Length: 88
Image 1 (spheres, rainbow, N blue to C red):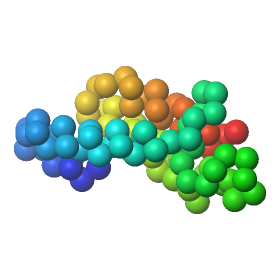
Image 2: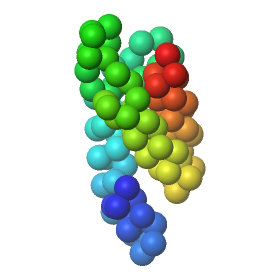
Image 3: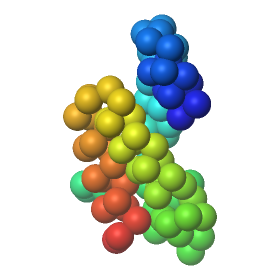
Image 4: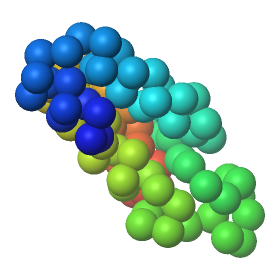
């Protein structure tokens, strides 16, 4: 988020691009199950805790912020899917 906000505040597209690359790497590490996305422990394991413990809520809120700054709907979709992963 720091790179995203820095790039937005100084109007530097290359810094925003770097921030997006970092966020996209995090998104690619998600475990996808239907319409939900989760991060951390493997799905179905006894350690699968999709809330604060393994990052779904943090990735989801970061995705909302990326959507707010970039206007790219893919980040809004990720936020919704992360919320579904935290809810299920």
